[in-house]
Structure formats: C-alpha cells, structure tokens
Length: 340
Image (cartoon, rainbow, N blue to C red; front, side, top):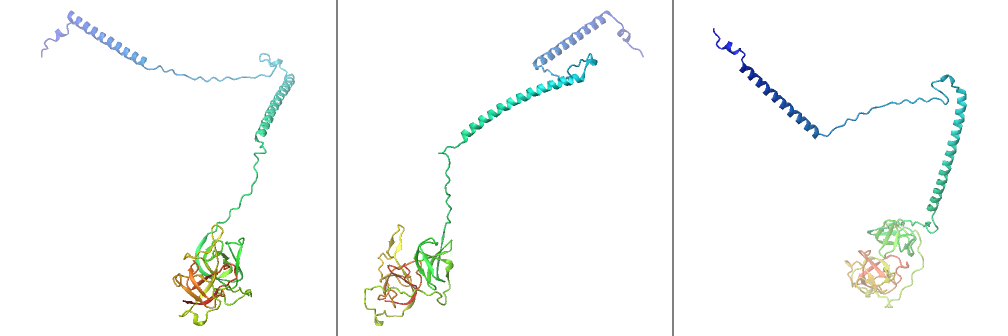
C-alpha cells in the first residue's frame, strides 16, 4: 500500500509557520477581548448593587479586680488587714450616716410633699354644706291591683263591711249580713270582689253556696217606709193580670262619677226617681216595662218602670233605685213580680 502525500504533509515550511503564528495571534486577541468584556460586566454589576457592610460584633469580657484599701499588688507583704478593717468600718459608718441622713432628708421631703398633697386632696374632696346630699325617704312601690271580669252571686258568711275600694284602708259604704246575696261583676288580684254598684267586699268572707240558716242576727230596726205617690196600697184586684214570677230584689243609689260627684242618669236617658225607677235584664223585662212588685220593699204602691240596667243585673233580678240605696239600710230579698 502506498501513501501519497504523507511525507509532504509533515514537512515544515515557512508558509506553515506564518499561518500558525497568525492563528495564535487571532486566538490571543479573542481571549483578551473576552476577558475584557467579562471584567467590564462584573464591574458594572458591582456598581449597580448597594454595598453591604457586614458588621461583626466582638464580645469583650472585662474582669475588674477589686483590692482592699491599702493593698499594693506589687508589695502584698506590706498589707495589714486589721488596720484596713478599722478604716473600712469608719468609712462605712460615715457613708452609712451620710446615706441615712440623705434618706431621712428625702423621706422628710417626701412626707412634706405627701402632706401637702393630702391637704390639697382634703381641700378638694371636702364637700360644702350645699353639696351634702340630704337623705330622702324612698317611696315603697305599691302593688298594682288588676281586675278580672267575673259574674256570679255570692253570699256573706258573716257581717261584711262594703268598702269603696279593694282594701281595708278604704271607707265603709255599708254592711251586709250573714246570708245576704252579693252580686259580683269582677274579682281583684288582691282578693276582693267588685259588686255591681262599684263597691268591694272581701272574697274570703263570702261563699258561692247559700247558707242554710242565719248565724248572725240582723239588726231588728227596719227601714222607715218611704212615702209613695199613691197613699193606698193596691188590692188584689188592682194587681196586673197574669202569673207572677219570683225575682231577687236589690237596691242601688246615685252612682259616683269621675269628677267626685254622683249621677242619677239612667240607661234610657231619664233621671232616677225613688219609688218609680228600677233596673232589670232587658232580655226579660224590656226598657219601659211597668212591673208590680208584691209587698213593695220600699213601702210604696209596688209599681216600677224599667228605666235602667247594669252589668250585675241578669235574669230574674230587679234592682230598685233609692236615694239612700248605698247606705246599707236595705237587704236583698225575694218578691213575686208581675208585668203590667
């Protein structure tokens, strides 16, 4: 096998040397340029960034050696502890005395300041005669009394005082006696019944069952018969025709008003007249009905006109008007009533 041109390739000539030098120069120039550019970029980035200064904390421990007074470290053999103790005691005493004196003066000044402050506080806090509050009696709250509507008939279990209000502190209007019927229209929260006349009786002194017999004798004095427009009582022939019915008979008088007076006005607009006016249940005895009450409790002729009505007048119940009907001189009774 024959290699052609191999020998000529390895021959060193002037042209090859010049070419190699040129290549080396070019490579050196490129490397230098690359290094210069890199250095320029690094310098620019360093200038753009803030300079961070790292502070290093150095801890230094200082040991202080204290020597007794009169002690010379270079000549320790000349030190006398006894003499130094006496001098130290005197110095300590002087210092303590001065400190105590200063403390005393400071305490004195503080005490004076405290005293002045206390005097100022007392002057400020001391109330004047006009500012002293005068104790007043606190009113005791009174119980609010409520009423609940209630319609029924109860009976007295003893002699009961009928009062103007639901309590013993109210004035007595009249008295009812054992066995007397009381018509109730309401009951109060403190245990009192309100009657159809607007008065009050103690609930605990009544019963809803009519007593069998009279336990307490009633007063023997009877009310004086009232004069009537007809002097002669009607005879049996003068009574209205028809069958009579048994009715409960009660009495009422002038009714108190809000302004402290009394009213005699009726539900029909007339004025109450003793011996003529009565109240009844209009569903049984319509307004304007003339009735005859047998054995007139007022001592009159027995004829009355239904001109009024009331919340407690229900059913076969006739309430007769009398000028002193609230005095307690009349007792509930039963009579035969005829319609004219």
